[in-house]
Amino acid sequence: AQSVTQPDIHITVSEGASLELRCNYSYGATPYLFWYVQSPGQGLQLLLKYFSGDTLVQGIKGFEAEFKRSQSSFNLRKPSVHWSDAAEYFCAVGAGAAGNKLTFGGGTRVLVKP
Amino acid sequence: ETGVTQTPRHLVMGMTNKKSLKCEQHLGHNAMYWYKQSAKKPLELMFVYSLEERVENNSVPSRFSPECPNSSHLFLHLHTLQPEDSALYLCASSQEAGTSGPEETQYFGPGTRLLVL
Image 1 (spheres, rainbow over the protein chains, first blue to last red):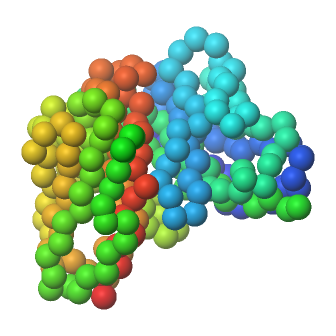
Image 2 (image 1 turned 30 degrees about the vertical axis):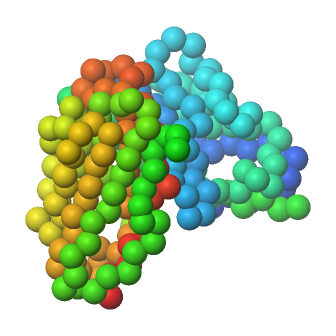
Image 3 (image 1 turned 90 degrees about the vertical axis):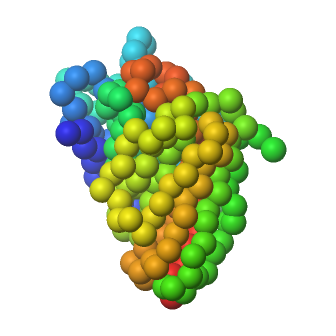
């Protein structure tokens, strides 16, 4: 069975600084990987996804993520954060089998300091 | 309306009540999902429907009863819930399910915040 680990429960970053959120997965085959963002009281919004091809994936809101098979990682990055980026971020891996089971990590809450 | 909508957004119910959560997707998708998001726990997949047939039931107690009358609508009927069922219930949809491709990307609604007293 697949699993996802987000080692950082909370991250505090200053506005304008860079941000990197870590995600490690465990899955036997080629994974499908996703990053979602959840603002307080809201549902999950898809930031980006990786299925195949270029291992550096561009997403919305200036985010990007890099798939590194050798490290079983899919870290999310943004060069310069904005106050509106304060939210909880979830990494997920899709099994791709019938039923499309998405397994989510525990999430990383990002706080942005002015 | 665009995307995935859920009603109500907030719900308070007693343990003996019966209520239903509604999800509607306006994306022309064929698969729909229910998730439970509890405090301090990862999102848990509850049910998956593909072309109105249930294809996944993730060991969910029978006090939760899903219904998918057509590919655009998904309900979650609730009865005799427990306080530990209080959570954010999220609905999602995808173009397909079980095809192992980008069409399985899931899009989420805003959720229903449920409080069981």
